Length: 168
Ligand SMILES: [Zn+2]
Ligand SMILES: [Zn+2]
Image 1 (cartoon, rainbow, N blue to C red):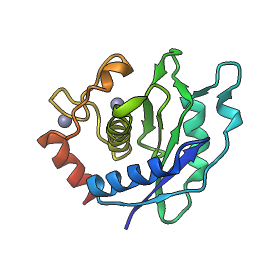
Image 2 (cartoon, helix red, strand yellow):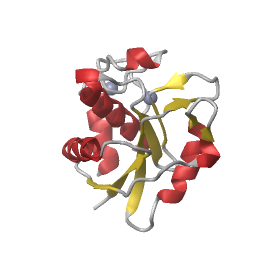
Image 3 (tube, rainbow, N blue to C red):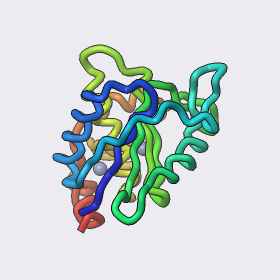
Image 4 (cartoon, rainbow, N blue to C red):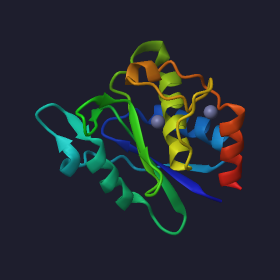
């Protein structure tokens, strides 16, 4: 059975990671293992503003896949992420290297859990090869990461079918 490694990056509450692992297991039907926390990945970290470059970070995360059974790695961090255009983003994932990351930096209060789970589902679906979708769907794409938090928590029929197909 395929395994996803959930990697707490920095001081992420372990209970939150375990809760996320349960939600992913239920939604994707894969095995999820919460790995030992990694303090910081310095080569991708911009100390002056406490942010990670997602591109660099994903390259480093590829090194955390353990063949043969760890097929995907999803990191969870409290730090901010920025992309090539220097925008702060909620999450990012690569299909080919099967790695992704979710940031909890903008998530506070009661909605934290739901938003974390929804963002993780979205990024994980990218790791399974799904692209953005225009339907009322987890894969709906929005310009700003804040709007992304308004994502529904379900896949549309088209995306759910695609996910079933790739998962076999
Ligand atoms: Zn996306
Ligand atoms: Zn969809």
